[in-house]
Image 1 (cartoon, rainbow, N blue to C red):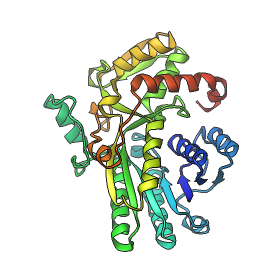
Image 2: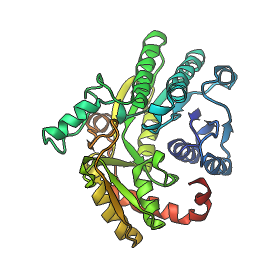
Image 3: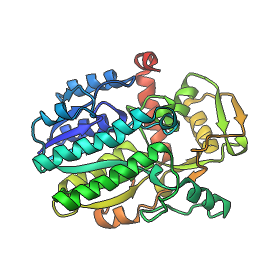
Image 4: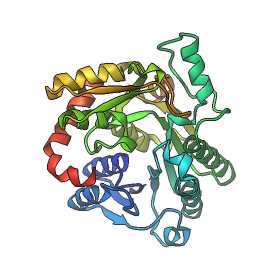
Length: 334
């Protein structure tokens, strides 16, 4: 099976590419290498003999010229929610037009698709209502409200989902959509746009200050965190069964197996790194911020017998170990 991974030099894409290559698949990457750190991951792909096609996914003419693939795993996205408010054209071109181009290529070649979507397709207002009603530990599933504002980034991911469904209906393209929340683990740099877990760990390693932002500045926001290895395990199952199990959308996350508040994450980082850092408070936050998210994995567990195996301690330890081992090389990218 030939697999193309878009965004193959990003955190999620490079992990999936390397693990699938080691499992015996013929893997190729598409990444324009525009993000800091992509060159680091490109070296890892080359080491594993994975070819990268360097061009922008919005360039359909170049995409059309690529060989046929049996499966495309679409990991390509401008992932930072706040960036989407300030760089709308770039986010729409990468996230939505990029998916549209992949769909046209898939239609031409009869290629299956696994789309890495986002928990940010969900309504901000509806999530806030969970907290306002004190329904803590309520899990969010595939039927949660997606109609109201969700961020421009979230819109592009939801619009991409809908476009995939339309192409599947019209042209019989087989697909899987995974709505992932926070993902972390090795190969994730300690940068804000890649996720708060690696950012927290990196700041503790280097004894740099951080802020608790929003909701009074107490660090009580809660997120579940999925270890990248658990996501890869699921992707492998989905690839094996995609002929029989397809055209479905799943919420995928750490759920109650692996969740944390920012305050608790600080405590974990202090224990693992043996470092304490200073925190300041900022009471206000972005209109795109949410105070809470825990994924309901019921559907994906029922269909694939898959559950996340690793908890938040495993996530932090594995990420810490990788960041520490690559500390000197990573500094030029941060």
